[in-house]
Amino acid sequence: MATLIVSYPAQEGARFDTAYYTGTHIPLVERLWTAHGFTQAEVLFPAGEQPWKAAVLLRFASQAAIDAALASPDTPEILGDVAKFTDIAPVIYRAGD
Image (cartoon, rainbow, N blue to C red; front, side):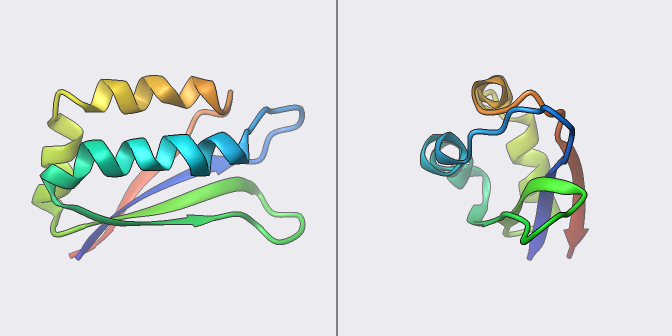
């Protein structure tokens, strides 16, 4: 299994709509990337003061599946949706496999 980790650093005065993120954005990711080997999303919100506002662990069948999802024609729709719930630039990295 491979994981794409997307985190949102905490920033003074930044906007992050948790309801939109969990109710709309994550389902969009699931719908558009499942065909490319996406298997599961685990959303994390910090307890107490942390250096990040939110994070998600996006699980894929393999690193090749992550590559396929990121290269898919659906990815611009996912990236374009980010502005609807936050003004924080996400930090993205990989783990696993």
